[in-house]
Length: 233
Image (cartoon, rainbow, N blue to C red):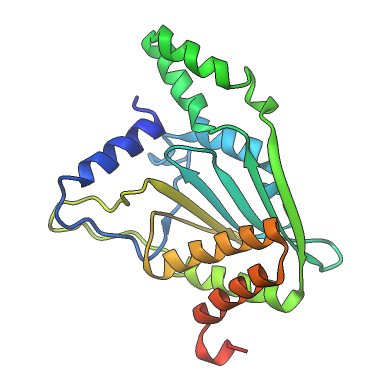
């Protein structure tokens, strides 16, 4: 079976020969191990296990980012028992898709690749180091973020087949997964409303890392443009 990284690379290469690749402007339903869409369950389980702090029961909104190359990361909005909100960002020190590549190399008997990957990966993925940051967020801002997540997730749907036969993928090979209060959706290098959701998630991460007034203002500006007119400040 082709690894996730190899699949992403092949898809991106195929786009070089396509004439009308489509960028997703909405979220698609999530895959499941209970359906045929669960082919990457081993990799997905590692991602959730390493980024487990972003998958606790008090997460009210989350964006998980899976690049074809480079470390994954998750941006979560958490609400504690007292009703206080905080942004959390967690990222592994290594790309977790390399464990998928390692398993494929072992299965293929590719000793060279196995040796190279084992030089950079902890033997047990449970030992992968994780960088984190967290910062409090006031209730009005947090509730606006949840509202934006909810609106986008409620529009999650499958695409009708494209008459051109071109698959809906993005050339930069980044997969995004969104969650809020039991609703979930995914997109591959999206544009439109789904792309705006990505921008907001990344602005949350930037504010968490920088903790500056300017980074908070940048987040506010993106939120403001995403809300319906009647909900704007």
